[in-house]
Image 1 (spheres, helix red, strand yellow):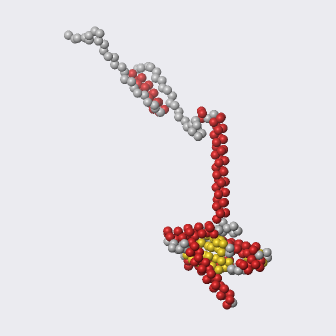
Image 2: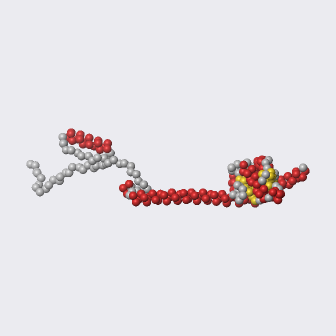
Image 3: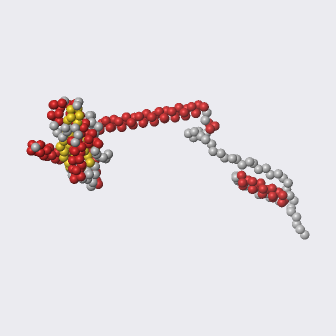
Length: 267
């Protein structure tokens, strides 16, 4: 004898499982449609399945992070004005940098000649001493003094003396390397820093420079002025300060001047 369910007791209704949906690409969506159609055909179900069109994602252009829909006329004008201000500020900064570079150059250049002034030259000497100390690399100084400047100034005037100094400065500049430094130490005294050059090689270079200076004459108002110079050569030493280096070079220059005077007296 089968016992049926008691009245008043209802059996739970089992709901169909809910399938989770996920975003798919066009290809996946098409495959899903084909699959559903096939399933419908197989089961005989004639219901129609609608598939939403796949959203096409395209790149959008924005200015300064502002999306196109928020780019009103006022916003665009404000951005253009800001960009113009930035451009003006950039140009002003570049002009200021050029002026600063020009001022720095003028501060380091001799008042009359296109060579370094004494302050700038002494600074370069300090660098060479530090370089010699750190890398044990030889560099040298040529100390040059123009002879008979008082005679030239007295006979032809200070304009002629200036022409002689210009003659010496240009001959030095024309015959040294870019990494070398030519400076005017004051009055009729010049200095040449020969980077990475031993004292022996510097002595040979010094004689070559003197030959270039004395082989031609300075011209002032039709007057040909012979130019004679004396020189001294020393190497930079980590144990010798700038003043000591200049003093040693000056000492050797005067020794050369005395030698030249003796040679003239013999002649």
